[in-house]
Image (tube, rainbow, N blue to C red; front, side):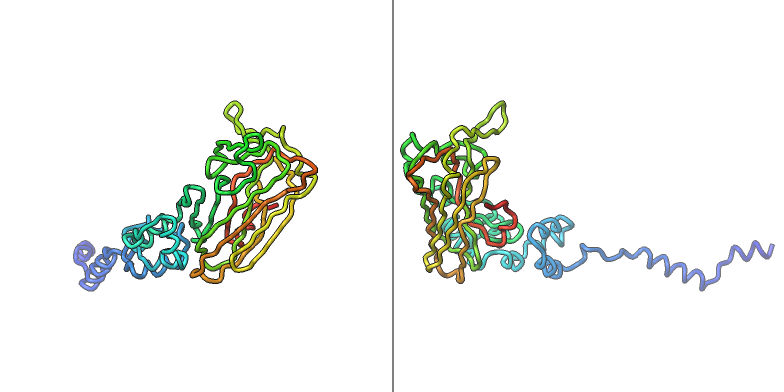
Length: 295
């Protein structure tokens, strides 16, 4: 009987401890969503843009913090306003937040009548640029006995210049652009053979390829501040598109409008050459060379 009665009555100290423990366990624990947006933004500023966008999907705090202007201004080129005005035009950058500007510049924006495209690398914010074959001065391009433009999905511009046969091969180009400070590399994107489709598959017609293994092609690059580079290469790979490295140039200041002149020639008239596709000229930051299979 005594034992049963003692089981009914609970010691007051025990009850108070139980109540205190219960109230503590019911208190919600802090979560990532409780972090101030300013703290989250300070952390995100150290990450690459793709990582920032992924974390923005976590919760409302991260999503709001991911739009902070100071984050994206640190990812943009220092002269992004000049670049934006050149490729987009007008003063629309003033109406956009920095993340919207970054997103817009990461797209391939065309300029100079659609013959050139510029974009920012999504991960680094570095400037990359491409000039189509239609933006180059090609000797004999108006004579269909020598050259033709071919539509193809293998080009960023959906069109390449195809050389059937010629004695004097010469391609020249010029570019004026406000590059941010850095070291850049210039390439010609070429392929031996004519692109075609057969039974829905992409193939390469090699019947007109000749003359490129006799004498090398000479590539040259000049800049408006006196830099010069040159290279020579035989063309002998018809299996894929190749980037032929012409040379590097250095930009010291974003306040200077850099002018580039470049060429590709094979003017030994002792033999003809043909069967070559010319897609474009590319300008990338020099550090990107490791990404490419270069000739």
